Amino acid sequence: MFVAILVNAVSVFLSAYVLRGVMINNFWTALVVAVLLAIINAVVKPILIFLTIPITVLTLGLFILVINALLLMLVDALLEGLKIKNFGWAVVFGTVLSIINGLLSWILNV
Image: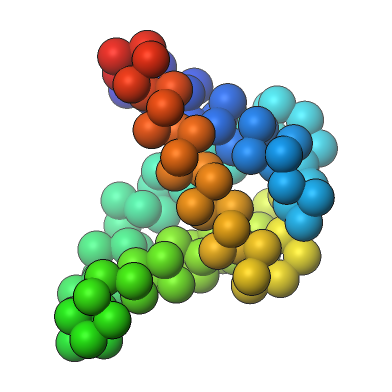
């Protein structure tokens, strides 16, 4: 679990480095973002997915991108060291974060 959080923190840091609409102070902030995002994804995300099943089905699952962006915006509001410019950047950040996290997890077999 600790390795997965570390991989997620590296993914957050790399994603923020690549995207100009997302700013992060340092790696320690990325680690806090990864932990907070893991907690929010474990607690809040299932509730939101359950409540939005009809719209998720109508959009063929694309509404999950909106939910991910909203959760990233929530983490941005809770932390001082992370700044996401707007909702569009949150959608892009979530997508890039997922891709980088998936690649790193695949490479490291986490």
